[in-house]
Length: 452
Image 1 (cartoon, rainbow, N blue to C red):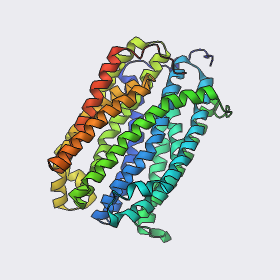
Image 2: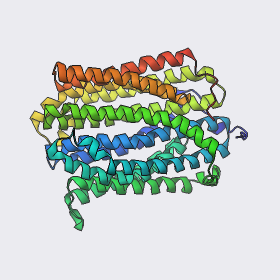
Image 3: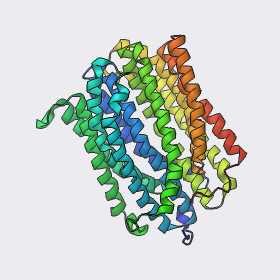
Image 4: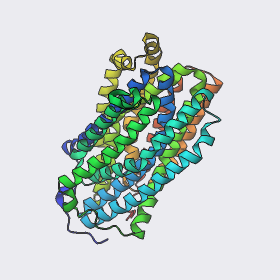
């Protein structure tokens, strides 16, 4: 694609102000759905410890199919950012349109897989008394995938074109809808049917529809459609589709492998009992809280690296990654300290009693240590994503997963140590990620690679 004249307002500079200018709006946009997710668990926790535990397994499964959208999101964001660095506006619309086409195909495949294949995969591992409820929940929940993936495409466009400050508008609407319909459908208020556990699934699907409408409204109302000539290149573009697929496929595989392994971990701890499942589900909420800042800075790294390469400033990439890494670690440290100083305040919102809190605190301390490792490693991993060398991402993931699974097998099945020790797997995982990504990026083998 021929580049249009460079537009300076689409080019990043390596300053704390620029980094925070991209990351903080992403952080705010992530806070809302995480508060929404935590609210879901608070509502379900009021139904009982069993429902809270079941929400852990179904939640991890949905994360697996949802990260397919994340893989596409990161690929689209990387390509848009690189062309924004070049100032090629026409390419941005073509990339977004082809990304939407691919996203819808993946969403339909995810729904079909969940309805037809997933029951056979999960049944041998799930607790018999929970299996039927969990599958019913998932068959409802996945109906929101098309809307979620397209919502993520809209967010990738906003971040890639340095308009991340508008992310919050769409996410507030989505999260508000989710909390409202959780309240109405789980408990049956205001004449709505009382669906209990399944009410959370119905509420989330409706919220994803609302979220897509909201981000579309943002793009139109702010004049971004006109400014970037969006929705004008609907025809199939083989070259762009191939570029998106080449970048996205390894990312999708990486994320699916990663979260499938997390699902395996949740299945492995079935033997620890219902309380361990419930505690582990609350730890997913810890990941949500601390991860708000981490994933915002990781996404910022992807954007900045892609944009700098688009500008021809490859020599500035490692410096940018280090700047983002320091800020990521600083923000994650603040949240981790607060969680460890005031653990009761966070855990008490799940209404499971003092014994639950006492058992959960050692696990949370281990998890927050893992999150600090994640705050560094995820920045370097997303720096690798920004270079477009996503096949290397998969190799990094495989190496980390193998050691992660080995650790789980030794600690859970062989040594039979505590749940807190089992959650030490996150430290192992992120340390391996960091070491390999750091070595590869320092090798500079990624320089000069053409991705579109």
